[in-house]
Image 1 (tube, rainbow, N blue to C red):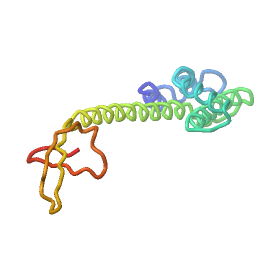
Image 2 (cartoon, helix red, strand yellow):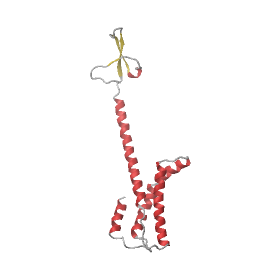
Image 3 (cartoon, one colour):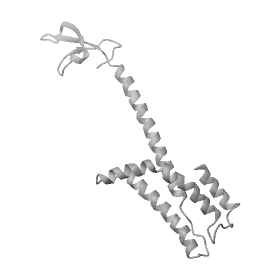
Image 4 (cartoon, rainbow, N blue to C red):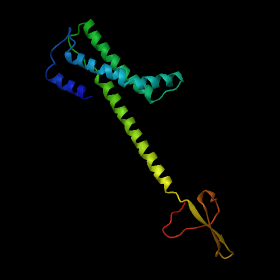
Length: 172
C-alpha cells in the first residue's frame, strides 16, 4: 500500500509525462507491476472462499470482494492494452489502486474482528471462572422463617429453590 501511495507521488513528480510504449506511462506500468502480486497473493484467500461459496450455489461478502477487485484489475489492464492497440492520444485513468486498497481494508477489518473475538472469548472465560461453586439452600416454614440451611453445589440449584445470599457473596 505504501508503494502504491509512493506511486501517486512519483506520478505527479518524476514519471508523469514519460511514456514507456506508445502512450503507456511509466506510472501506469508501475501501478500494474505493484498491483499484480497483491491481486494474486493478497486476493487468493477471497478467490478460494468465493469459489467454494459459488460451488455451493450461494453468495457472500467474499464473492463481492473477489468480483470487484477482479473487475477493477481487468478493466485497468484492458485500458492499457487498448491504449496501445488503438494508439490513444490521452492516457485514461486506471484503477490499479482500487484492488489493493479494497483487499487491504477488508483484510484489516477481518484481522480486527478476530482480535475482538479473541478478547471476548478470554473475557467470557474469566467471567465463567468467577462462578460461585457452592450455594446455601434454605428450607422455609409457614411464616417464611428459616427452618434449615444446607450447603449444596451450585450446579444442583433448580428453579423455585430458595437460596440465602450472605454479605459480600456473589449470586449465581
